[in-house]
Amino acid sequence: MNRRHALRHIALISGGLALIPSCDFSKEDILAAYENLKITATQKALLAAISDSIIPAGEIKGALDLAVPDFILVMVNDCFTQENQEKFTAGLQAFPDYAEKTAGKKFADLSSKEKETLLVQGLALTGDENPEGTVLAQVGYFLSSTKRFTIQGYMVSEYIQTEIIPYSLIPGEYNGAVLISDLQKPRVNG
Image 1 (cartoon, rainbow, N blue to C red):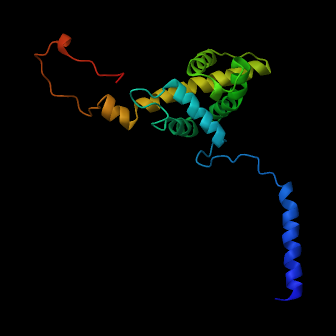
Image 2: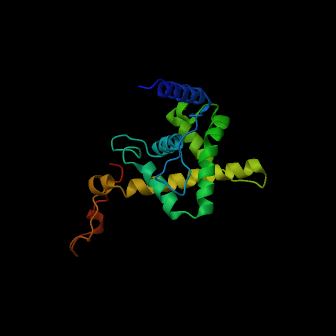
């Protein structure tokens, strides 16, 4: 190898190594699957924790087991207007601060009962004209949208429609001699 080439390569490598500490790798990447939303992986994890608090796993699968957070983000990305998408993402961004201010801890550190109380309080939020009231209104909008889409995504999932409440595309055969009191209600709670 030529000595000039070796010196040039060493200079390029040392210059590159000098630039690496100045690069900022701490910024979180935005998920590309939701082109209209600016959602990061930690925000998606927070949304998953909230939906899991709304419908936790028990004897039957919970919202997290059925990928309901993905359903929520797809519905917001595809069905909301741009103004509502901005309110949703602003509420999602403001929720960790609201949780820490209200409960004194991060949402992930709360017990299930504390999470439930925080979500009930957050669903009742309404806003004012001042900036703090606007943020509270965005958090309330985010939580109400999340609750609505969590329930919708859970109830239309394949697991619920096939194993818990068997879905019948066509109503059963007609039998006019059956009394209404003899009919069984579907098992909604497992």
